[in-house]
Amino acid sequence: MDPRLSVIDRRLEKIENIIAVSGGKGGIGKSIVAAASALILAKNGHRVGLLDLDFCGPCAHVILGTDKLYPEEEKGIIPPKVNGISFMSIISFTAGCPWALRGSEVSNAITELLAITQWGMLDYLFVDMPPGLGDPALDAIRLIKRMKYLLIATPSKVTLDVMKKELQVLEELNMRIIGILENMKRKENESLSSKLDGLKVSFLGSLDYDPHLEEAIGNVPELLKTGFARQLHEAVEKFI
Amino acid sequence: MHEWALAEAVIVAARQEAKKQNIKQITKVQVKIGELQQIDLDVFKFALENIQKIYDDLPLDENIIDLEVESNILKCKVCGKEWELQDLTHLKEDESEAIHFIPETAHAFMRCPGCGTPDFEIVKGRGVWIQSIEGVL
Image (cartoon, rainbow over all chains, first blue to last red; front, side, top):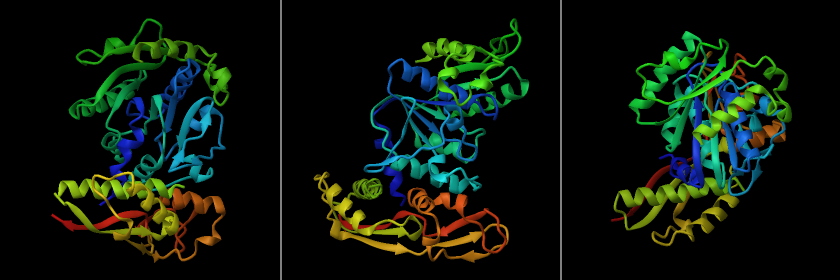
């Protein structure tokens, strides 16, 4: 019997809202939306956490501009604070080394991290989800039972198709869906909302493609000044 | 004291299972502790002793928890070589500590001694596991 499974709910019980930022495809902006949403809410005085669950391609730390993250040990591990956010990422343990491992071992690592992390009281925990519907995504669904999903899609037909498939699975599993947020919108008069016919989920709005966003990656004050962050702030107000 | 979190998991899981099986009194809990995780047994026992005092509806004496350290076996997925990591002291302190927290981080610091790939699995000796629970119905 795996004893770790018995304490995961306890580790998360003082968190009001757990929001998974997902969408199926890689490269659609899940990490930047998760990290920037967390930063925006923390700046507004909320207690916020960010969990980078993309173990094989973690990058939330790059967005936050930090790689020196040492959790404190106290009846488990306490996530280090980064720009006011309680931040947990596997990079705290892999020392910048690449981490190649198979699904069953990713599952074990996710279970371990969830069982030993003492988040404490939070208003919001954002979970930066891995792409796809493989072991890590299924483990997150299995282990973090109160997650609500914020789905990201770009105007691309490819990402939209993959996102719809993830949505279908989440609905089958009765997961709560916050809504769909369009990212990297390029054409002013063409919204993703027109392509969501038949879907029973809220459309939360569009974030324009911001050519200056890349320059602000790793620099939190600059990131929060971008057009992307301003538009995201409006979207976040809709779903919190 | 990261051992505390795992000790709590053992106590809570044993109690949950006992309730499920209508066990009124737990008489033995066999726990395997994987060598890779490098659990400090004294710290773990201290944590068990203190955590069990918190739960008085189904007392679980730390003396009935039988701890057995399981040696590790790693196996390469590519060339099939099996090996035992006998000495973790050659690792840097932060690498060893990372494996203590999350044994799978071994993939970041080790390679198969046969072919050099990171594509190996931890067959045995990973972490904390409840092998069996005995009690009085």
